[in-house]
Length: 395
Image (cartoon, rainbow, N blue to C red; front, side, top):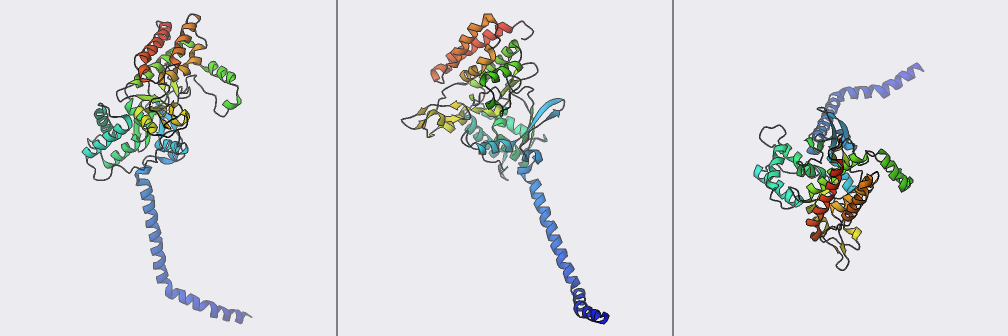
């Protein structure tokens, strides 16, 4: 039996072992080549992944659509990612013009500085309208693009600032940077940008979570909001700031802007109870709104809505949207401030304030009302509130 096993072993295994020994150098070379090829291809894929402009400074947080909040140089800050807005627009294509995902594909290699300036100017004209002040904004953008401050704008720097400009909030921050009621842009990298954090991102200081709102009666919801709201004089100060912001964006340096989601959850205030626009992504340039409405088919007014509440009339005969909005910023803001200010109003102010707010809420977007009447109503409201809190610890 032992001899039989040995014979079988010699017959079956010895030729195989001998053959392997003869072929071993060839097998080694083949496997070494395959291993080298795998390493080369893998390294190239990794290199392309991390060196591509679409991944510049993005990281896992950006991919998961999370916004950082933290402290930088002693300031509370928010780090935002450009991909968030692109995905929101894709999920809600009817609320505003759809923005495709930014791929850092412009400007292309070989673009001169003069050509890049022209690109920026044309882009701003298309988004903000043909304003005489745009040349200054182009210069500001080019200075901002020069991150390493070497006096030149590299291709990577140009691609980065171009990608950021496609984001509505970033563009608005640049356009409204001189206004005191907007959060400040503190830095940027790729399609990440850093802004100051607004301590209170709601008029009421806090908001009932969205999933709970349908379960609460409206009266209880209002009661909870009023419970957490600041004292009335502080609410008056915040309201004055909001009215000033409406004034600032009515005819700003770079044109007219519309607040297209007038909600208490989008407007807030800082520790000193100075109003701050918590989410500039809800503000839109007039040029963008008009471009959206132009030639748009409609059956009813709701079909002519940009964002949440920038609504124009529908010409039912022509089946097309008109270009003027039904309600201006001021009318919508007064509607927001009505409950906010009338609860707990000093008795000697209650009747007059209610009257002024009611007049304000009836303002329309007609050109005949937008200049003199609009300015007069806004001035009356600010004066009424300021008289009540001036020369007090709340002013």
